[in-house]
Length: 95
Image 1 (cartoon, rainbow, N blue to C red):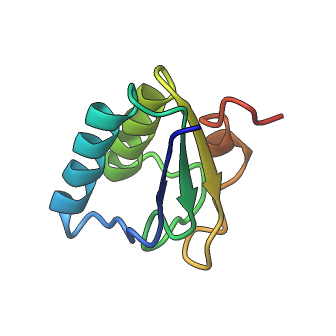
Image 2: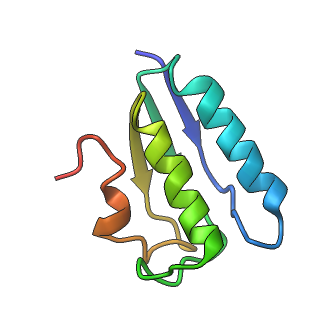
C-alpha cells in the first residue's frame, strides 16, 4: 500500500503559500497513492466547522478534491481538535 503522511502544517490565512503547497501536493500525489493521512495540526487554529471564511472554504475545496482520487484520513491535533463531523466527511471511510 502506498500512502503519504503529513502533519503539523499549521495552515493559516496569514501564510497562503502553505495552503498553495498543500494543494499542489494533493493535486500531484492523490492519484498516485492509496491514502493520505493528516496526523494532526493541519491548521494553526480551527474555530469550528461553521467557519464560512474564505480560508476555511478554500481548505474544504482542496480536501474535497483530494478524496475524488484517494482516501483521506484526518486525525485531530491540539490546534485543530474542533474539526468535527462535517470535516470528517472527507475521509472515505468515515462513518
